[in-house]
Image 1: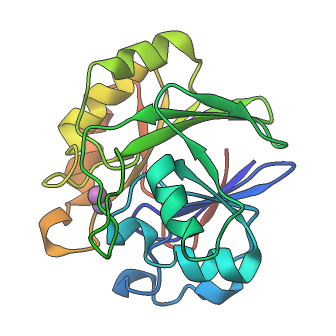
Image 2: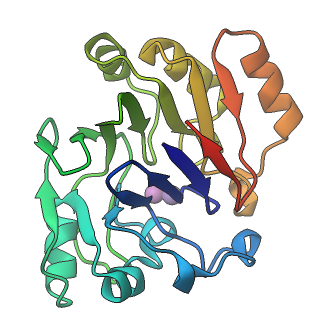
Length: 226
Ligand code: NI
Ligand code: MN
């Protein structure tokens, strides 16, 4: 499967059977100005929580592509009120088998409100199994001990973890998270987009260099084989 980075916490995961877009925040992101949001094709839009820096482009992409929004019940209902009524609501601990694979919606330690102030349910993350691989997309979160449970339950190949600090885990906690998840490969997200989350890439790599868990910081627009 292939993973393309569109900046901040936005990725496109291409499995054999479906394209899944995570947390689209592209058009307001100065760092992603070379990405043409109207050219992105996807079958699913997975939203971790309701904050603007995760949903900014979701409505336009959902309407243009007819993709299915997958998120917590409150967020899926909020899009339902905008006429996007093919969503798939989930809640923590619940899993569903889609045509491309299996998805579990899991908790995150953060907050969630929609851009208009509506209740955004509780923030989450996704564990996805497709094409023989297991991917954990953590969303915005602090480090939490249940990550150890995820690592015990699932053989996680790739973890997409926030590393920007201030609003989420910083690099030290992300390194700890990778160990708890027992996951060899981490892809960083939620960094550099705005002042509070700017990081020194070399310093962050040094933290991971002390461990067996490899950190990859993708270029915006880059596609990687997972
Ligand atoms: Ni957030
Ligand atoms: Mn965020």
